[in-house]
Structures are given as C-alpha cells and as structure tokens.
Length: 457
Image 1 (cartoon, rainbow, N blue to C red):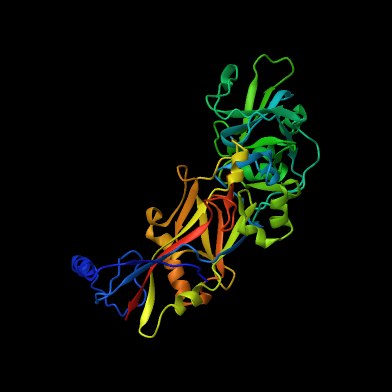
Image 2 (image 1 turned 30 degrees about the horizontal axis):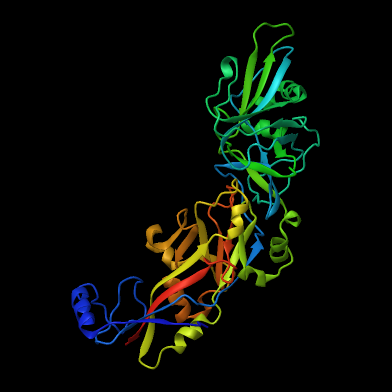
C-alpha cells in the first residue's frame, strides 16, 4: 500500500559509535516488540536500515456532526454568517434568568421607563461590518436541569419579538459608552426590549421574587437569535455569566411622576440552564462542499477536507491495508518499529478566498474504536510539544505525531476503525478550515511521513 521507499544506509563504524553512545539509554531487551516511540531503538548488530516513506495510502472524507453538547459553556455564540464555501450558519441562545436579589418590590404603581438586554462581547469570527438583526423571544416552555441540550435542541417560544428587529454592528474591540450610572468599559451588545416585558415582570406576585427557582417557574427564560444574513456576517463570542455586564435591566419608577429612576437586574449564572443552538443551511455552500458533505461523495475527500465548529463538520481518515503492508515487510524473527510518523494537514489553496475566516488555533484527533466510541490517541499522552495539533501560521498547516497509534494498528488491525478530525473547542467557537486532501491539485497536500526500522528479535 506504499508506492515508494527511501532508504538511508548507515556505515558499520558509525552504527557502532552511535550504539555505544546510546547504550545507557537503551538497556531494554530487543525482544520486546513495542517500545516507547522516540527512544531511538537500535539492534545489537552492525546492520540497520532506517527507511522513510511519505506515500502511505489514506482515505478521507468530511461529514456533518450528528450530536454535540452545548449546555453551560463558558462562551456562548450569537449571530449569522454566510460562508462562501460552507453556506449559512446561525447561532442562537436559549437561557434562564437569575434574580440579582430576592424579595424585590417594584413599587405600589410602577412605571416602566425601558428594558435593556446587555451581552458581554468577548470576541468574534467573520465580518463584523455586516449589520445584524436580532430577535428576542420569551420561552413558552421551561428548561430542565436534568436534560441534555445539543446543537439541534429546540425550546418553544411565545412568538413575540421583544427586540422588535433591533439592528447592530458588533464592535468587539470598542468599549460601550452609556450615559449615567451604566458606563461600561468593555465591548457590549445592548439591545432595547419592549416595555411590555418589564410590565409583566414588575406586576408579578411578590412570591415570584422569593427565590430564584420560584422566578424560573414564573418566567422560563429567553431565546436570543439573529436574522439570516445574505452575505458575510459574523458570529459573536459572549460571556454569559459576566454579571457586571450580561444582564437584563429594567429601568422603572415606583409611582407615576416619581423623580427617582430605579433599576433592577437579572443575571445568568453558572447555576442557570443555558445552551447554544446552531442552524446550518449547507445547501448554500460551494458545489464541491455540497457534493461531498451533503450528497456523500466520499471520493471528493481526496481533494479537500472540510472542518467547521458549531456542531458543523468533521473529517474521517483511515489507513487501509496499513497493517498488512507493515507485516509484509518483515520475515520470521524480525519486526517493524515505527520511529516517527507525522500526519501533515496543509491548508487548501481555496482558503485564500476570505480574509475574515481565519484558521483555528488547533485541531483535535480521536481514535474511533470498534464499539463506536472515541478515545484520544496514545501519542496524545506524550504531551502537546510531541503530539502537535496546533496551527502553524508559517507553514499554514497542522501536524500530528501518530507514531504510537500506527504501531498499535500494526500489532492489531482491529485496534482502530479510523480517525476523527475536528476543530478543538468546536462547541464554543466558530472557526472553519479547509485541508488540501492527499490528491489535491497543489504542491503541499495531506500526507503521512513515516520513518521506520526492521529489527531482529
């Protein structure tokens, strides 16, 4: 299954010197077939060959992610983005609200001046110069602490847009300026809501404000979403539990004509239930993307692989026939040791189509077991400096060391059904990335570089 071999031959005198220098390190018996990768295992004889190949046969394709938990994340996403390759994505928020204090009393005849929903803006992905239209709805059903919430989960709402189609441009680097006692010194999205919401909350029975749980039984929470954009757009990163900024604020007077304006805040805390919902319309993506991901043309993965966060897209990689190839190189009394194996994932040339859709910080690689579960690769346990997975801006690629993984595949072909590749933190960031497949029409393409030795027992 490997089309070419490059062999480096070592002279006997060099090997003897190298072996003597390494003797203190390599005291483990050479009869052991599995050694720690990278330990420079050498035989007792003078003859050794170190071989190299970068032509390992791989199959790969991209697929949508069926299930991804999005409940209680430290960062939540909001916005709409049209990706020229992967189509439309909307990020919506469902959340409970928490009392800032109990036994709240709004006055004998309260008058609502305004209601504002503030969201702490910590970052973004995409084009923030695109106007976003936000909608806010009161939930018609409760959120359950015993329920699991995923990227596709839905909770019914009452259908009245409390934000009345408010429009905004995200300003992730500009602190918000608000007059009076509400001066904010960090980027914030501030959404005015209908006064009717404040009237509903201010007129509630006093028992509603006895405990946070009593309030949640009265008011189930909010759905916050943005209208689909036609082009560009961005996904905003929000801090849901920043109680100094992320708040629902009610400005009111205790009686008509009262001079003093009062304010009451609702928060979101780590004790509250909130989750992200991600909606994708992949039919609006590029022809190649739709053909592979939606229509299931797996052969197209040899040209390009797609990765998308927000419960979007992952890729599947296999090494067909690898164990058979490795075992076919050895004869009785010998075994093959992988000295180093690097899976190299370069960026596709089509990434140059946008300056807004930047690469992810790192990728995640998991082993798919025969029982359908996934686990980390044994190489991962060696530490990030060895394992890799981080994006290199200089090389425009990501590299993983998978030496121990492939060694286990040689020993037991049923050890793995293949590898799942995704973006790290895919549930709470908005990155996407495109990889040049192993048969891509460009110089740098996906490959696995392997250095190995054949040793006598």
